[in-house]
Length: 446
Image 1 (cartoon, rainbow, N blue to C red):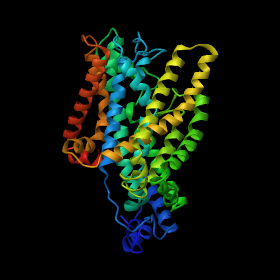
Image 2 (spheres, rainbow, N blue to C red):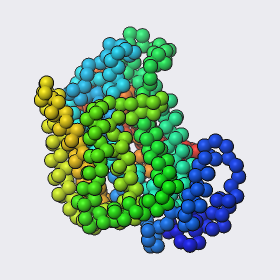
Image 3 (tube, rainbow, N blue to C red):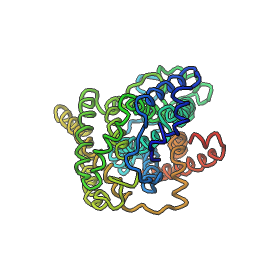
Image 4 (cartoon, helix red, strand yellow):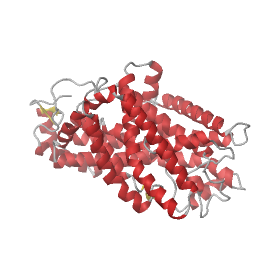
């Protein structure tokens, strides 16, 4: 929504005046947020000013469906874990030194080369693209709501699912892990073993916590520099006709953010602080893409880089071919790392760390190009998938684990099991989310 002289911090002058000068006291976190919003209001009479006065569409079918597609990739990614050619054998004990079930909840004797290739390629970009897409909506939301309302909304939509999901989703999913590793298959024994763990996994909702941190950072930047979004938006605006230049900026920033941490800690290391868990080498890399998403979203979801007739969309075959090449490179380097030994293995590990940056950027830009070029019309079924995609992300993990467990002794190949688990888990998550969203309280959150 454009913000003119008659609006302050996304509200009318009178409303803004009461917000900035007559706010009642609020305890705790809400009061801190309110004070931050007052500071933002005082620093800029116009709050977050729109770049252009022209009305901007609030919705893009291309981006909505891309987001839904990436969520499907998440479900397929977790579905593949049980069938990877390089996955370990099932652990003998649930609580022990090597708790492989944390990364591989269920491990099947049937393996799939297709699942292994998909896993390697997908792991090189899909979560990064999720942070970029999430950033697209931030600046317009800040324009409409102001800092305090924006953070209250984020705490509701990200914080509540994070806390509920971290406490409920992993115990339900990993009961299947316990049944595969224990001689005492009762829920009571499992519950005791679960609480005997030194730290407990939180499942996919780690994304919620990290995105919430990024949202707080965005509002913090707003307090320091109220026009920071417009300034980086000016950089992104040139991406409409010169996407290669914007791609180069993303490439350089993400290399600086990722490579030093990857070389220092490795790509597979995770850090845990209570309920907050993240892949050690990637938080700054994710933040770079989040900020780049904010920059692109300043001009709306159908302009600049995301224009359906822009240079990125017109040159989609070039981006697709480049993505295929980097995908092949990722697979080659991963296989070479796993099959080599000694100094050669160290070389391939470093090469994989370096290749992650361009492969991630290329695959992400390729999907943006394809979806902005070809996805223009809505479809009722895909609209439903898009509307329920956030809920699908939150609830899919137990469906995946229990379907993998149910198929352990099925007479199917690893590829067949992977496909069946991915499709069934996605469908079950979709239906359960759609049913849950009929409740007003749930619908407000997801």
